[in-house]
Length: 354
Image (cartoon, rainbow, N blue to C red; front, side):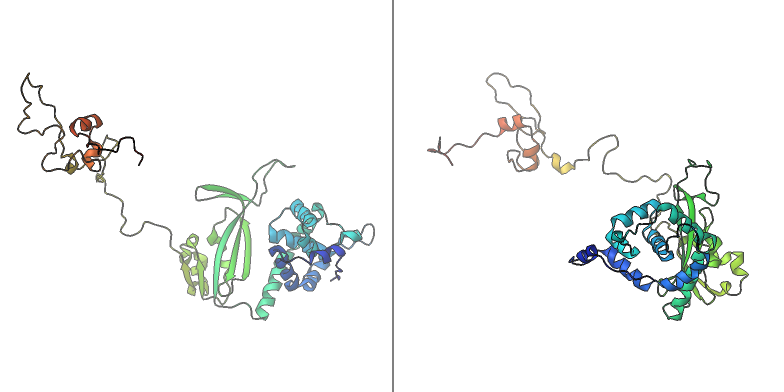
């Protein structure tokens, strides 16, 4: 592994008060990744041009590839981010002052295809898992399995005019996805990944369950997508998988006691059908206002025996002249003005400010 000598700009950046989270993460990864072992694993398959232009150093390409994986960037995206971010450039150990430049997107594409062609990604994961087990960082006895969809563009606007034959579409809920699916087995005690398989998105989660369980697992935890795993032929016929305790989550359903209403059952409503307002209780209709026949000349008006005089409450109801009462608020303004005389003004208060 080549030594990295900080430049003047690097020394200037070290004077900051706060270290960004990205820079702290990359420093931690730089310390824990086994660079020498992974370089020795890839070097037999890497380019060794004895003539012409020398290839980009293997360590530089490996660091660039890991940045792309960790931050989910495209080939062009990771190239731009390294040119723009000081933390990524420091992780790449590049010094622009010495003429070192970021590898372009095409070079990264060829390096990724090299890893896929020789299945070096699987070898790196197996080596790392074995190293963690040797250090006692992975527990045994239980695993957590799950799957996630890796969506990809379904467009056919490319050189061949076709989609990737390894990718297919699937429906999750009410949404369709096109791409691939990653199936992962995680250690239940530490949360570290120990098994990974990649298939088309149309492959069911249960089809890869046998590749995610370790030989000494006694219990496996899964979500509701793995319902019925105990009845699978590859599980019942296997002497180990048939004895595993499967802790599978239940599917969502109605809560007990919240049964839907029966057919023909009418739900009571507080609003009359066909009307836009709620019912008014009878106790608020105690005031009845009726207009009696006009009296003759010289006669006093006589109210009907079953009617109340204009402005008088009926059946000991609150007075309608009280503006704070319900009847006073709902009474007609003109009728209340005629039935309720204004209080007399106190002498000596005319024109005086209060």
